[in-house]
Image 1 (cartoon, rainbow, N blue to C red):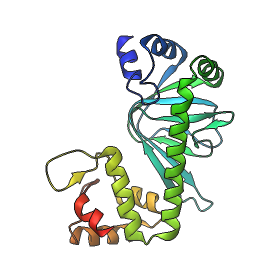
Image 2: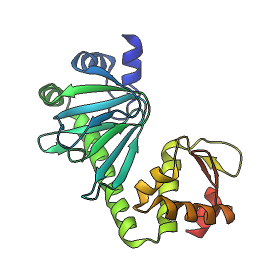
Image 3: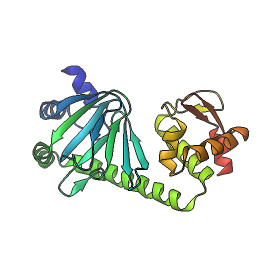
Length: 226
C-alpha cells in the first residue's frame, strides 16, 4: 500500500495532496495491467473516467479514412488522460496504445467528480494539463500544415527529447524511446521512405545520430539551425 501511495505522489496532478488524500485516491482507483502493443482505447470503446499512467508509455493517435495513422503524443509515467462530462484531456476520439508494458490506474466518472468537489485545488492542475495538451496538439497540426518535412522531423525529435531524453555529458542526447522510421513517419504525416531520406540528410549534417530503433539529437546544432 505504501509503495502505491508514494508512486501516486509523484504524479504532477497529485503531488500537492496530503498523504490522507492520496490514500483516498488509491482506494478510489482500479489498477489494470496492459501488455505492450495492447489497444487500451478506441473511439468506439471510449469510457468516461480519468486514467493515471503508473508505469510504461502510451501512444495517442488517430486513423484517417485511408487507414493512415497520425501520432499526436506519447505519454509516460505520471501522465494522465481521459474525460468526464465537460472536463476533457482531448483523448475521447483517439486510439490509445500501450507501447510498453503498462500499469494504468482508472478513476470512474462518478468517483472522480465526487473527489473533485472535496478537493477543488486539483482543478487548477487539471486546467494546466488541459492547456498544455491543447497547445501541443495545436502546434503539431500547425507544423504538419506549414513546415517542410525535415523541419517537422526536427521539431518532433526535440519534443521527444524534452519528454524522454537521457541527460548526459556528450554532445548528443539520446531519446529513451524505441523509434522506428515508420513510427516517426506517423508523427510527421509522411511516408517511411521519405522519413528515411530526411534522417540520412540530418545525420550527414551531424544534427542526429541513428541506430537500431534509436535516435540521438545534437541539440545545440539543431537550435542554431532552427
